[in-house]
Length: 89
Image 1 (cartoon, rainbow, N blue to C red):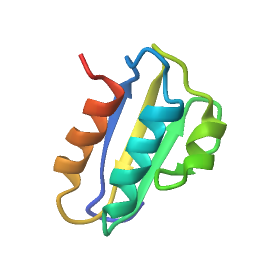
Image 2 (image 1 turned 90 degrees about the horizontal axis):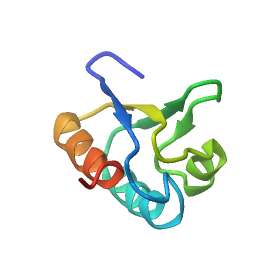
Image 3 (image 1 turned 45 degrees about the vertical axis):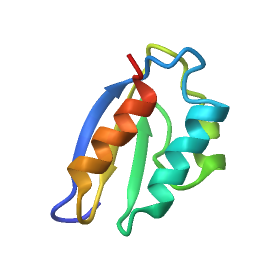
């Protein structure tokens, strides 16, 4: 990630974890963003947040914490929207 990027640790509270429906919505938002979105999970290589295959390979379950880093304009707003997908509470 470059200068001006922001990142946030997010605990996944969605019932299914980061699988199927929440991953598809996450990718939809990340793909529409003009900057890069990177997702890291402990012990696994980082993946492109705009890649459904990348997110699925992380195999993130409910209760796990991931780090989402975003470059570009409106990065904080995008992080808020992504967090709402992962923690709908």
